[in-house]
Length: 104
Image (cartoon, rainbow, N blue to C red; front, side, top):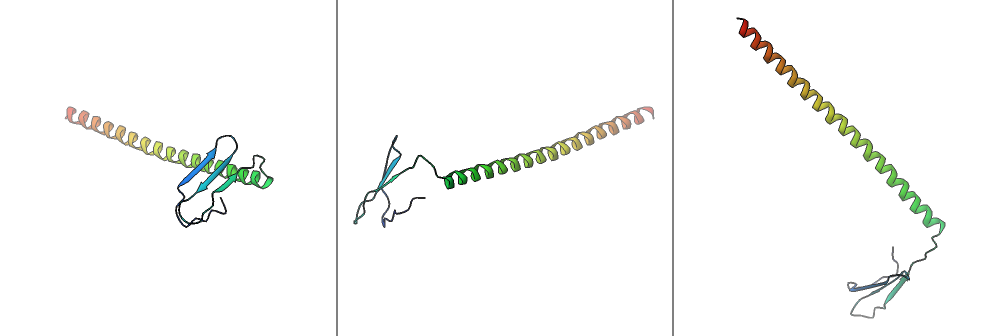
């Protein structure tokens, strides 16, 4: 997060440099300074560990989502199988009824 931006009015301009990793914020009215931030391209160990934790958590969430999707597919497949089986049984009963009526 960006610390030190304490404007009482909305920020109306944000500008950044495409290669120097610097961003500037400003607001009209009042005695508000133009605030500059620069990015450190050499991340600290803490930043790296935070990124690794986020990546790990996203991987776990993705695995959970995959498992839930597989479970839903199984349930859908079971439901489809059950419907097909019921239809086949219904057709078989209808054919048996027709054969019975044709004999009598």
